[in-house]
Image 1 (tube, rainbow, N blue to C red):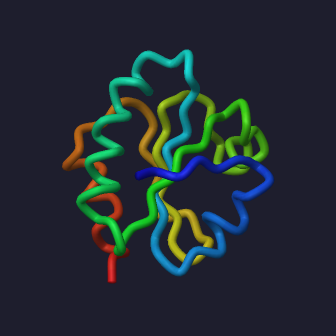
Image 2 (cartoon, rainbow, N blue to C red):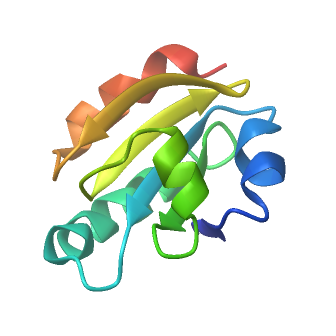
Length: 106
C-alpha cells in the first residue's frame, strides 16, 4: 500500500523517515503515470518494511515537486535520510527502479 503525500506532510512522511523513501510524483490525468502505478504497487508490497513508498500528486505537492526539479511526470525520486539520492523521470522498468533504491536498503 502506498501512502499519499502532499506539501503539508512531505517533511514528516518523506524527509523525516527512518527508511529510504521512493516518491512517485504523478497526476491523475497522466497516462504514463497510470502505467507506472502497478509497478509502484508491486515495489511497495515486495519491499514493505524496508522501503517506504509514497505517491505525490503534483497538484497537491507543488512545492515538493519544485524542490526536486520535477518538470515532467511520472518522476520517481529516492530520498534517504532527507537527502535526494537519485531521480528517474519517465516511465521506467521495475528493475531499473529497484536498482535505484537497493543500495540504500538496510
